Length: 446
Ligand SMILES: [Zn+2]
Image (cartoon, rainbow, N blue to C red; front, side, top):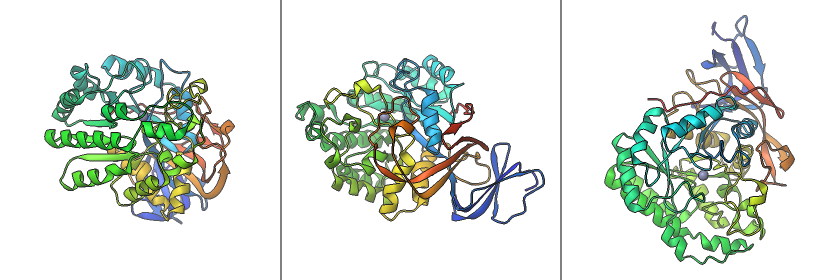
């Protein structure tokens, strides 16, 4: 321990081996050792003692829309990464769409990296995008360090990011499988969406009927079939329909390489509670019924769903009109995701170790960062959140750090207060105050 510059001590440190009282030694931004609680502090090392607050690995959120540059009035790197830091997230991977340009060529990746570089309060990496006409750009993007490629199977909501039909999906997936890349997919089938009743207007029930479960189920079945045929790695984004779970379990059992995420809003909110006209609850696929939510929790518990990510996808408040058909679809969850998930998880008998596995360890592994992120273990980056798990707070939009303070959680009382957040051994957020940006731009480990 002689080389430690900093020692973080808590009676509850969440390590891969379980939760225990420990002292975590840090040097040059890395964890060097996880020592007994009462280990001697070396001369010259600074001690931070968090008492009974829980020390957990910083969260890794692999599904965030930062929208910068191009739609910076919706969200930007400065505000998004501050919101993330406030919520205990220390790494985010930015989605390729809703910024202009979208991240679908190497030059557009460079534009994004240049914009993010001086504004990132946490570590930031980038997904690339798979469009109908950019197959030739995929391998260069992979070589430039994107973490994988996002595709839509139905309209994305922005014109510059068109979706893939089944032929184009096969073409892109074959290319990506050729270099052992990862395709991440917004899985809703456009034909089922077209066939669904499109009432429009302020009634949530009408919106829910316009994005039926069978649109998700069919798209997922088609994707699994393509992944099986091409021996490709695919990841299902923001699963909402519990009806797709048997398909996914069966595909896994036969060895298809498919992973799955869901989001805090599908796990904590229900269709029954969404007021008519309240488009802060609009996202695609939609928040479904309470019984659906119970099945998503079962799938998290049994490992069918691998991980939980925010799909933080903000817009300006004026685009959140009371007509569910035309309002912008997206929920801003960065700052509240840990508390929201923890509140519901504990009520269902889960421990914080489970939350850490879903929101940090497995997301880090998904993007190939498992050797440096997602665990309090020697050799990992010294990224931490300090959580008071039993303290509660009521969500006041005025306290949110993301650019447009629209939230589906306003007025909710949540458990779990993030006391401070640490990136590479430096405290970057404490009590609503932040340091200057200290984030690093990440590329996929080769
Ligand atoms: Zn998204």
